[in-house]
Amino acid sequence: MLTGANGIVGKEIANRLINNKEYELFLLSNSKINIKNKKKKIKLLKQDLTKPIRFQLKTDVIIHCAAKNPLSKKGNDMKSIYEKNLKITKNLIKFSNENSVKKMIFLSSVNVYGLIKKKIVTENFKPNKPCLYGKSKFFSEKLFNEKKNKFKTISLRIPGVLALNLSRNQPLMVNMVKKIINGENVYAYNLNSKFNNITDSYEIAKFINIILRKKNIKTSIYNFSASRPMQVMHVINLIKRIFKSRSKVIQKKLNKSSFVISNKKIKNDFNIKISTTKNIITRCCRKILKADYKIA
Image (cartoon, rainbow, N blue to C red; front, side, top):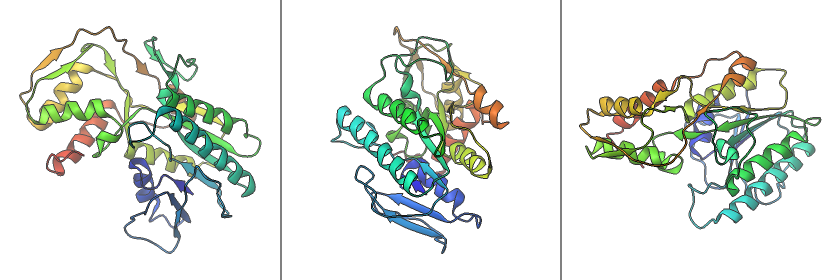
């Protein structure tokens, strides 16, 4: 069962699994789901997850992408987002216990870390005053982990997700890309610092497919960010080259710390390769080019 099937990541996962004959796929969303190439083994379910789940469903795995996000919808204050995300988690736990779920794949967030002052962020970094959205993800991780004797949970701490509809998940990146496309000046800080605080929906979907195929997993938490960090200046120059832009880069003088997110744990535990920062940025920018510079 896939929650948040209408979201940026949810759609990519659905499209990746949709033609796989191994799986019977249940797509769950609070809004109408538009899926191409619909097969007999796909069922569309409408459910507001902040309310009790009334239906019974035999499912081995839940891929939990649904969340109230401060960037995705207007009219939700941070306190409301916190409360609703925890309600969603508790409702899914109850549903999982009642329907003998074996695996939970939970899309958490690097927002759990809050104010980051270290140069390299591992999963052992203790949260430092996270926002309420980050707290909702952190406490959801804890609630899922407490049920490890009932079902196993892989929590993926996701950074900014690059996609055509960038404005919902990575507003700083989309604003920069728009400026580069339009040939405007780009203002940035810490130009010489390393950066890998991104992933994309394709990369997440690819890894989830690996977890689905893996028989034995342990409840654990993982960072999921791009490999091979790049200097911020090199990131900007890469985007400029792709769009053949003459934008000038102007460095801001801001007292902001920079950091790199470590993904060593997930690469070692699953023996996988994760796309580089350069490849993820290139892949997304080429999609934007193909869409004739139309960014949502």
